[in-house]
Image 1 (cartoon, rainbow, N blue to C red):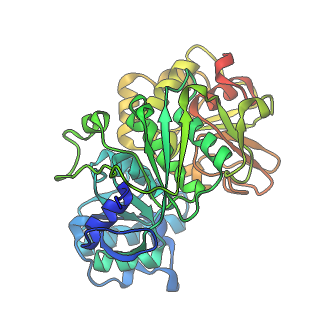
Image 2 (cartoon, rainbow, N blue to C red):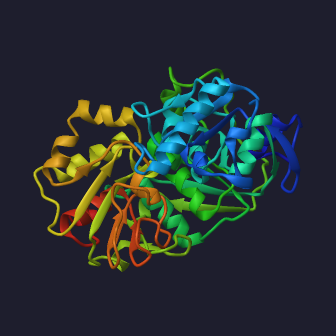
Length: 418
C-alpha cells in the first residue's frame, strides 16, 4: 500500500521505510518554534527558564508576535525572559520587535517552511506551513520543552482526507471562502490529516494556500498539506533555507475519504458566532446583519495580496459611520512592502486604522477589543466566545473582500454587489 504526503514525511523522519494510520512513532523535527506567549507561563505546564541545554540552537525559531509591542507589564516581563532565553542558548533565529511578525508568516518568509520538512511549534495554527508541502502542527508548552531539549517528539500517524479541487474561484470569492465552505459543508476532521489535490490548485497563489492551511486548525486537522508545484517553487527560490525534497503521494495511497470541490461554484461564506465547524453559510444567510468593527489581518489574511485588495476596494470611499476598521499586516516585511506600494494611503483615507505587525486583536490581546453587545466581522482565525473582548460580543469570520465590503456599508455585505 502506498503512502500519502503526510505519511511519507512521517516515515522519513522516523527512520522507517513506511508508516500507516495508527502507528505511534518518534520523529526528528527539522525546526522547532516558540513565541512570547510561552514565556508568560509558569509551573508544571512550562517553565522554559529551567531548560539547561537545547538540542540545536540553530534549529530553533523564536518570535515575539502576540504582545508586539508589549501591551501589558506581564507581556513586557515575558519578553525579557524570552530575550534572555535566546541569549543563554545562542538562538540566532530570534525575531524581536522591528523584525517581528505573526509566527506562521515569518516561518514562510524566512524560508523555514519547505517541502518534505517536519515542523513543530508552540502555536495551534502551525499547520499553516503545510502550504509549503511540509508537515507542521502545534504542540503545548510541556511538549515544546521536550522538543527543544531532544529535537524529537512522538506522533500517532493519522488517516487522511483528500480534497480534490477543480475549476477556479470566481471574482471576489477568495481562499478564505473555500475554507469556510469546507468547514460548513463537512464540519471538523478531528484526528485526521488533510491533503489537497487536483488541477484547481494551480489557480491558488501561495498566499491563498496559506490562508486555507492556517484555518485547518479550526476544523482540528493534524496536518494540512498542499502538493509541490511550479508556483511553490517560484516562491521558494532564494528563500528556502537549505535543501529540501518535494513530497508527492503514491498513486495507490489510501485515503479515508476523497471530497471533490468545484471552485467555480463557490460563493462568499460567513461564519456564525462562537464556533466554526458546521457554522459557516453562504453570505446570503447573513447579509444585512449590522456590524460595529471590521478587522483585516492575522496569519490567515494579513499578506500583501490582502492589503492590495483592501486598498483597491477602499480607494476613494469611506468606512461606514459607526464602524471601526482595523488593518494589521502579518509581518513587518509586509508592512514595509505595503508602504513601498502606497497601499496604506487609500486605506487610511477611508478611515481605517493601520497597526503594526502583531497577533494583536486576533487573540484578544490588544489593538481592537470589542465590548458587550458589539459584533465584529474579521479575517482572523478564531471566533470563540469572548475571543476578541467581551463574552457578550460576536465575531463573524469572512474573507478580506467580504470584510472590506461590510466595513463600507456597516452591515454584512456580499462584495460582489459593490
